[in-house]
Length: 219
Image (tube, rainbow, N blue to C red):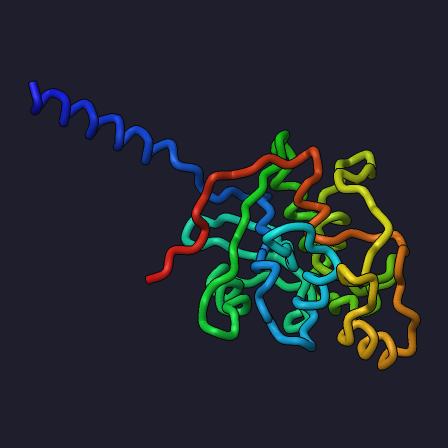
């Protein structure tokens, strides 16, 4: 009897493993750090976290996944690469925290993913563009969530992700030093309340659903 029970449990375990979620083309990967993590006082990630965090986890970046036969690729917009397509291992390496630990990777998927592959192809039209340090629309540069918004557009030209007034202030209602220095350097006022997107808001979009997937496995 015990052997039969163990056999049944083993079969159930194998079935559960076979149903385990896998990364799919068109999935969005959100990068999160703890709200109290000192990324670096003058880093963009820290400034974004201060401005958009609303809980224990600050989502500071969003990237597009493309799953190939032999490897998975990431298409995203960063200061380091601009709008670029690179292997997922490069993505993990770029977002390794200064203490050697990894951030939290949250995978979201379109509830209706029938056009996911075409949205990924849309994103490739923007490859090579610089990172948008101005955080403004209607220029050639793009920041991470702007890339997603402009790529995930059906054939009718509509948007799956809405614009909202951007916030650059921290919880105390002040502009972090990073934003003050950045926009002073480029000779632009901080675009507080200008229309735009950020990973924290985008992750809550009603068109997305959670994917129970451990994206990174430390070797």
